[in-house]
Image (cartoon, rainbow, N blue to C red):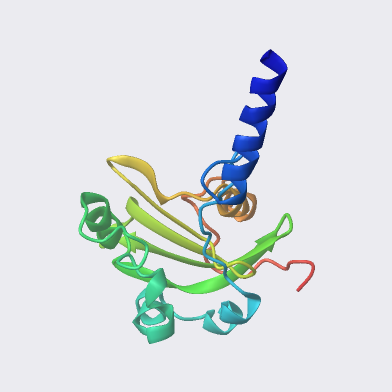
Length: 174
């Protein structure tokens, strides 16, 4: 009698599974949709070297790299960043450790000791690092470990908030 009931339960479960109402086993895995960035959608950042961050983000195709596009605008951190980016240095391409980035930096009105802002954009992926360092401390507004490592590697003091400012670093590879 027990065998008969087990057989009825199995047949009922299989029947419901075929109708899409129930299934035996774990449910299928569902992944959250990921935004796919194709290589064709990544602009040639090397062509932007020599521009200031303000000129760079004023271009319609580059507005996604402005603070608004990165979700930082309207915050106290954005005000710190803008103050510490008042005197902008033209961007340059820095490379090392297998990474290349277009790096923008700027200093506060009275100099870099008062405040300094940094934006690094990975040339290959379009990923971003944004940081500000001032009297209130150093803060990564948009952290990115790989770009932070590149900034440290190319920095005169091995610190992300002391970026190279005068010459591009030769990098191996495309």
